[in-house]
Length: 141
Length: 365
Ligand code: SF4
Ligand code: SF4
Ligand code: SF4
Image 1: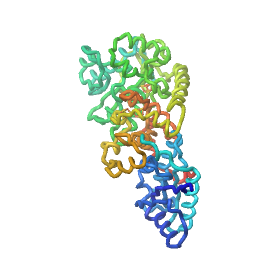
Image 2: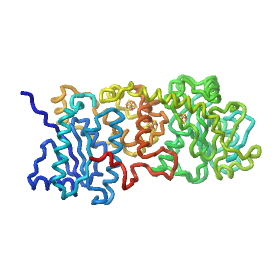
Image 3: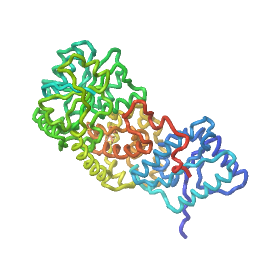
Image 4: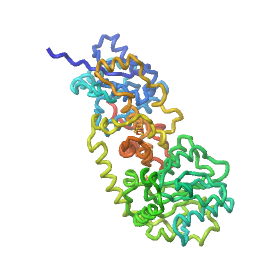
């Protein structure tokens, strides 16, 4: 029998919103895939865009970034900066012909447990469809 | 805008103006390319006395280091100085000033409509005046000299955007016998007062650079098509940067890489033994030193929107990787999403320092 592909999705979650949202999904017993590997950060803007690149080059099948909705940032404007940086990463990936669809940014608040579960499921489905990250096999990175 | 015509070759005419500025005490020093008469080699230097002007070659078609980067290490000066920069060096300097490394205070900026600079090979392997003559013929005729840098051949911003003084070179047919000096700002008019014949009120005639602009546009298209052999994808990126020695020369000479300690040279991303073991287990082999692609793509993400396309990174690369072509192409697009042009305006904020409340929703799911 062929082994089922379980992707690994490195997920940077803002402690004030998306991480708490994920927690809520858990306590509410909502199912979301084990593919999501959460890393708690103080703010989505703590994620230097090269962290996303690093995760991708080291073979993460997807990289997820969760932040507060615009206007709700604990530090007021962190997520606006995240959005600009994320736009740059996406653009660079597109221009180099790398699979930018493996990167995703979503706004998920602390009360949006169901949204977290939905996004996690959706993104995992998409990554399964795309298959493994080819970077995993390259020795040259 | 006013214009002064000096009945001399461009480089001579400009040298006279600079000497006048020094002599009259309006500037205390001049920052310019210089040529060593013994060895024939070029360097960048500060000249404080008129006698030193003999060595000055302000319009030489070489770039030893991006002069904008060098200038930022001692600007602002205590007293006014005049600086001669290529258009891309001036833009680089403005990008540095935005990062609080340098300031335009006390600086009179002089630039030229630029025919490009010769590649390292062309400069290192002896540099006789015939070469400059040959270069000038191309430049004044509005042609691309075949031995200029790839990014110069494809450079669209060869008319200085915000120099106080512009010397007309590219496409200026009589530049070999006449020096056309444009005074673009009040500061320039003030400084040049009393120099040469009376200035004429005249705007820069952009029709003379149009021919070169369209040749460069075609060249740019060709260059961009050749980046990563016209392909994209992980394999093409690896093919392009796979020869990299990891010397980080390209980032050291980049005027935009302003960080005092580069993230990629810090220990932030060091790999430990368990990492290597795991990689080997998964892949069966490992290329060392690691993180080559990480360095290049990471640098693109960090700074490409400010890349001025000077070509310095390609020029120093010992592995002959067309670093600048890739960065120029990628940078143009990362800047475009913010409608940003690096070095266009000192008041324009670096894209990652500002934001709008409503934007880029297309990147968010
Ligand atoms: S990149 Fe443009 S401005 Fe810079 S030296 Fe080359 S032609 Fe001149
Ligand atoms: S200069 Fe060339 S070899 Fe050195 S790090 Fe840059 S790309 Fe690699
Ligand atoms: S990346 Fe290369 S071409 Fe661009 S500014 Fe830096 S040195 Fe110049």
